[in-house]
Image (tube, rainbow, N blue to C red; front, side):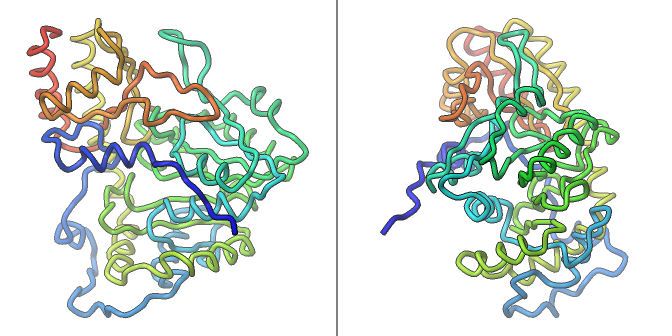
Length: 384
């Protein structure tokens, strides 16, 4: 009997050690969160949580939640949505259900590890699409269509991408994105699109259409955790016009979460009804923090090379100082409790992720205070 043997999830293992013990969390991947009280205050007709039933919810998600999810997309109906417990769950199942041994799968690198590790463990032939060109100070983040097309094979069944990308913050331009999806459709390749940061691009005009809006077979995956800043709700979803694919995912869900928590679905529905206000707020926080981070790194231009993210709540600056980026991150958290994410947690078996980078978060309101702690750390090491 075979079983899925998965390696340690490097990013989550690192976080399990430091996320709640480090004093200064400067690599958070989510936007600033809020209290239940603050969330309900946004709604014209807030629910009375005292009346929320604590029984099971529908496996597909409640109709109000699914209707609110559909409202995020053009041309997507409530029946084109399926709720999940976060985004990791649908990614886990999608990367198993829609590829099998003998198939060829392409995933972008760097990536959220499950889109790589799960199909590899299932015996699928997986290939990495690097999202960069050149090296060092000349390195740029890119979705190279020529490189991608050259990787396609007759047996390619699935491609998984993540834009805005974690950790780079890269978002391809509109035409490149449309051409990418058209190329996949023409070859009969399903796209699994991780869109958890869609909606907090620094330039709203850079927001890409969802894959599910442009491709009838694509799966658009999102979650309340990142752009909305509500990870405590643990509510995610898949949007797709391929209802047969959604039905397969729903049956797989019976083996994991089965259904979401009722109060979480109620609160997620409220948040989605007020998406414009929440996303505008979080985009403003990211934009303000981007300025502060850039000014900080410009003051230390011999140590850092910073590029503003196109979208999302994280950026991926280069470390130019002494030692490696991993050494810098380890010393910062061990000596002064400043948590940054070293690029080795994005190490891939498919492509050599640049190791001279680290991830910094720009979505939370305490970023200036965290940078102050990092400044103190640099001064203590005589690097300021």
